[in-house]
Length: 158
Image (cartoon, rainbow, N blue to C red):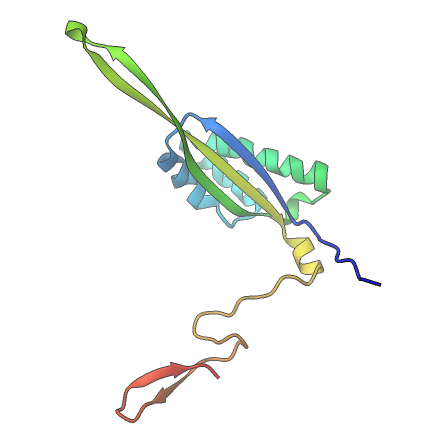
């Protein structure tokens, strides 16, 4: 008899397309909220003075609604595990100017992807493994500095 592996889904996502804003202006806000908890993110977005906060706020709220309705997650244990912004299509128009000339206008759009993760399920499923910090090897022991024949110090992992 083969044992069936049970896969626990801990992530929920929301995707916004054709948001009429520059991707660099949206990245400025996304970089502030990446890795934070759901409730902390909502407070940050309400207080930031940028125009990009409103569509990001709606996407995070939509992803949280997906998490609660579809996966039965708790709002208190959600964190933003992945938030990325990609450039979308550019709408190109011509504005009429003097002497029959046309002036090009480019309206840039972007696509925002928000992924929320439930950290309470990660800890329960025992798949949460702490990564070693800088200066340690895979076992969590600190690296020792050894001296070579010529007096050059080099690091070796134990």
